[in-house]
Length: 438
Image (cartoon, rainbow, N blue to C red):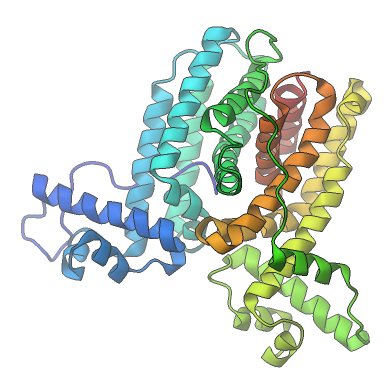
């Protein structure tokens, strides 16, 4: 999900017309509105954005539909209010950030900000996790997110005591780091669900702080390099459903030419529809319409939408796996030749795998609300983490296991959509300075 949330509705609580001639409400009305917001937060977390409905919110809140509509126009309005609360808290957290310097004091200030960010994330985790689903159907959420993001970038830039990058280069770096933050916390939460003791909050926060501080100021051994405090996390294995999807993706269907065309059309259409609409808003009707096929054609190859999504996720994982294998090694990235190689790889990765990375994220986002899919999602993230450990190991410093989680999140954020030349340059800068310490 994007890291920036719309400002929502600041100021005093008001009743919506025509429920009161005097729309202003007192403390009791404010408590009622907040009770509904708290209930909605819980329901968004339990059921996701699209499955959440007003009846469920009012039942959890212990209020009537009439009371709900005194304060909110609908589910979308509730989400905007929650997103606004998050955005204002994130803004206040940045305002509390002191000067960010290259020394230990600057590292400590950065760590305190990341800790505040993590606390906000934990309080409003369902908003972060369902944000993309809400943005897909609510342009107001998208517009507010863009405005808030721009303010956050400017505010963070103003806290930097020194910098070697001009604003036109620094701003994309800050923006990409901000996108990486919540994605790291999302991924860590999924990994923690499968291996509860392997990804402690403090260790993840420390790794994030080291990467951010090195990105901004370069490698400082006594400041932004911290050794691991615990053992390496365990390897996570795919469950039976995903293993079956892996086996099926390896098999070549024995199809004639027409069958191969049908199968290809369905998988291409399904990938595009899932990425555009999200898992829950996608129906088999949508897939066959885009593919120009019949329902019978779909069910000839797939038993359900869930089985179809597993297959697409596995195919995407395989394609991204191949791309990650080609990332230039740390030792090979020294000098101008290595620098150019990294940028070429980032351009290829983004151009060829943005859709695949987005499909993986669709699947991961479903797992955030679906415990039955969490284990497989954790295994997929762990697969990427282990690949990034191998990439980072030759540098011989820092907490490679946790920083590999951050790098998976960075590449996931970067690869989720097509990027400009400025963002590709920002990604290269973060990899070279933040991860490689160059």
